[in-house]
Image (spheres, rainbow, N blue to C red):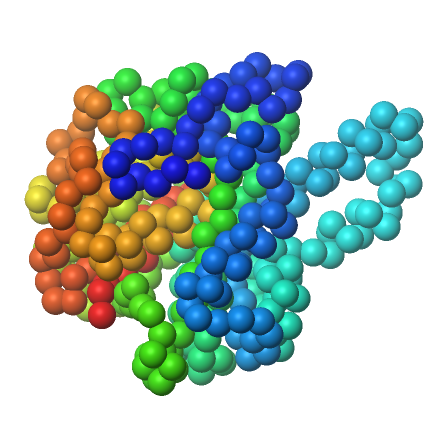
Length: 363
C-alpha cells in the first residue's frame, strides 16, 4: 500500500466481484487478500524491525479486528449454496473459522504463554488494542506486548452493505474536502511492539515513541451516525489529555479519523475546534490508505510515531478544497512539536458511538 510521504494514494478503481459494480478500493495487491496473509507479512516485518524472532513465550498479544474472518464465512456460505448443502454440512470448517481470531493466529506463531486479547470496537479497535496492551505492561502482566489490528474487509457483503448505506465514495477518498463523497474501503494490518522502558533499554531496542495515555468513551447516539453534539467525543479527548498530563496547547499534531463522509468530518472538525488552538496541525491519511475499518487507528498510530521519529507530518491526501477552518497538513512538512516531549494524538471513532483517542510522544 502506498505511503503518504509524497501524497501518493493506494486507491484505484477495482472490480473484484463480477456481481458488483467497479469502484475505488485500496487493495494491497490486485485482488482482495486474507487476514492470514496480512498478519504473516506484518508480523515478520514487526519482529525484524524490533530485532526479535520467534518464539517469544512471555510476550502478550492484543490484536483486534472488526470483521475478522468474514470473507471465509461468506465463501463458505456461497460454496454450500452452490452445492445445495447447508452451512451445517461444513461444520468442521465452520468450527475452525469460529474458533480462530487474528490474536490467536499471532499467539500461535509466537508460541506465547502470555495474555492474549482480541478487542473489537468497530473502527476504534486499533486504539483499544494499543490501550489494552499498554495497560498489561503498566499492571505488570508482562514486559512485552505485540499490539495492533488487521482487516481484510473487501468482501461482497461488506461492499454491498456500505453501498446500501450510501457511505461509499464513487471516485476516491477526500477527507475534510467540500467535495467529499464518502469513504473508500482499504485492507491492511498494523502491528506494534510495546515494551517496558527497562526492557527496551536493557536490549538497546529501536524505539519510535511512547504511549502517554488514552481516552475511551461511547455516546450510543446512533448505530452508525456520530453524535452532532460531540459530548462523548470531547470527553474522550479530555480524558486522554488528563491521563497524559497534557494540555490542548501541548499537542502539535492530530491524526484525525477523517473518513471523508459528510457526517464524520463535520462532527470531528467541530470537536477539534472546540478544544484545540487553531494552530494545531491536522491530517487524515485515509485518502492514501483507504478506510481499513478496525485496523485504521492502528495504522494512524504508526503514522503518528513516524511523524515523531522522522519529524515529518503526513499530508491529508485527497484534500483540495477544505470545508473547515482547520490547520490541515496539505503537503509533507517538518514537525515542530509544541511541548517536551513532543506530543501527538491519534483519534478514532466507530459505529455504535465509539470514541477512542491515543496520546503518543517522542522519547
